[in-house]
Length: 319
Image 1 (cartoon, one colour):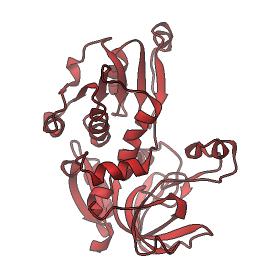
Image 2 (cartoon, helix red, strand yellow):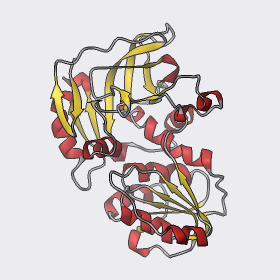
Image 3 (cartoon, rainbow, N blue to C red):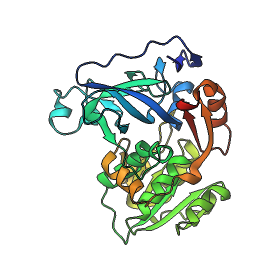
Image 4 (tube, helix red, strand yellow):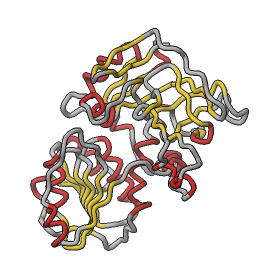
């Protein structure tokens, strides 16, 4: 089996990887498409000491598993959980104490010909959603998680910082709430994607201090954090959607004085994400900047790390 293997922060294309054997309750999925995201890039930079096959945004076809899923196109939730720990018992499985995470923690990921996941993690892709569009299910779900954590009202002033892949999806999903939304970044050509959907945009340098009820940081860099933080009014809420490879420094005393609520946010609801794709309430097509076969995976990663590039897809069925 071919796959992109990460070890000691070095990525290599291997053709000698064994096809995974699904454990009881798991399904074997033949991967069709997979998307490179910022977390994959951060893993290469040392965000987490992972060794194995990268990749967690995918669409595939079930080859072994429950009869109702076999031969179906599916996407998959990335956390494989134990079902027994306190978090699983309390309905918070994404924080399972014994979890493995596809392409991130102790479970080989999607940048390969095959992967395995618990069958309960898999969701069939609606017929009217293209395989390409469905690769965005995981990041759309992550964007929707904000609305699971924070009640957003129409009168709220909301700021999204970052015009990259995640920032664009966060802005599109938050716009559906009817809030007073502003999305900012540093690339006018990227912001144009949001403007085309009627979302108000601006350059990051123009953000007015202490004027937003909620800000969402989607850049993964200290400058983005600083903008999101200074934009908040007292008792505002700051949501962090990005992972950081390095340490982040900030004025903790100012958070206390202004009584700022700080929320980390990651995995979200897959059924709701698939519904948005099926009803065409989010548009992912402008976010796709390049497509590569798995055999050119190293070149795909180089492209994904190029300034200004958004989503790069790996197409396993082109090899």
